[in-house]
Length: 213
Image (cartoon, rainbow, N blue to C red; front, side, top):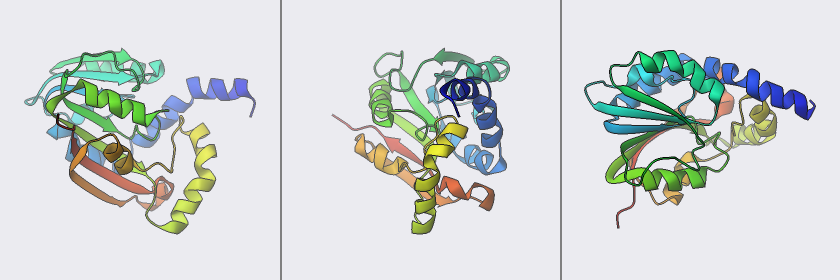
């Protein structure tokens, strides 16, 4: 596919493909379990089309700042954002350069975004910066499979999959990335995706604390 076609697809089609795919029950189940734990001032990195919004606990969230570099995705999130019972602000920016003050957030939420962010290490450094010392990172991700056979297929499919799914990488290890950024994993779990999503590898979720000192 020519570069012009790829660029058009990335701008005009991929956001809707990602929105539809990430609306599946497999993802909703994990969102339902993890997102209500966010509290205080919340920053969601990789806000996308706002699929997490229905799962926030309005009694616990003071304010939500959703950050995403894709204007089309933020446009899809707009109507839902305006209907929430707490203040929601949408910022168009990449995770590697968050336009927020140091120690700004009580909670940072990242769901199915470390796979797509071009430089996840830089994004995690920014998350560390904006989190309060007592804050928490809540994450839900997919990534490198534990089974060798599936892992080999992820490597083979990775480049094509990225073109189809908005730059998503199949073979990243989110737990390794989070630990490598200095976070402590307070809770972690992993499981398998249902057969239609086997290529996504392992399903990860957890809570992480920023380094102290």
